[in-house]
Length: 196
Image 1 (cartoon, rainbow, N blue to C red):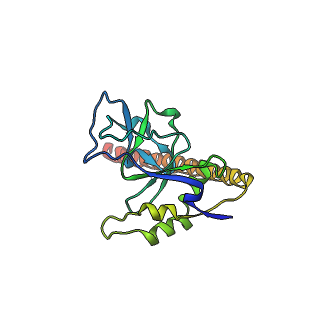
Image 2 (tube, helix red, strand yellow; image 1 turned 45 degrees about the horizontal axis):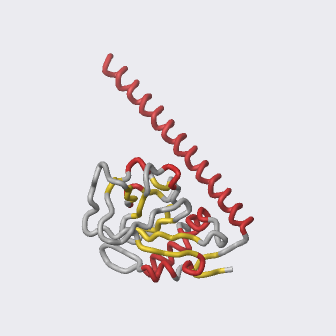
Image 3 (cartoon, rainbow, N blue to C red; image 1 turned 45 degrees about the vertical axis):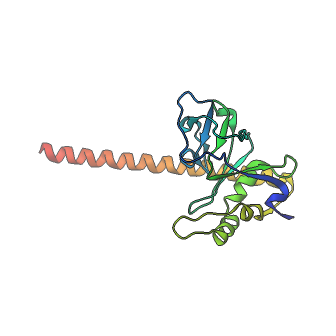
């Protein structure tokens, strides 16, 4: 079954800070910005800015299972939120959309995975606006086509994605170790040449 994103999730804009996000080291909230996120590793809570709410609108705090979608940039990647590691209540910066899946519709991790895959990324690319800095409108995100397979299939796909991510990490480690070894060999050769 295929549905539009707005049929299975609520979508809102990030917290509307006016101008530059004010930094308050003793602030009562954390602001998740693009630099703090990765579609693979999620949110780096330790790097998030502390701030205070501005304006009259009460913050819509991020919840575990929310998905942040980058509204601007060359890739509209999705990031799964896990607030268990956040030090205090958090909001998304204005350049994110916050997608909150309905609890019985899709597993949040599966939805985040699907938003990062080629079919959704092509859809965003096709509907992006702007020449220098690309962006997608909220209505474009709301209309994104989403496949809704049975829960067992969603769990199976998530398990495969975890396996692939683990294999990628292992490969990266192997490459790093190989490069370290080659650098050590080169340094050893250089030192022996200098000694002669």
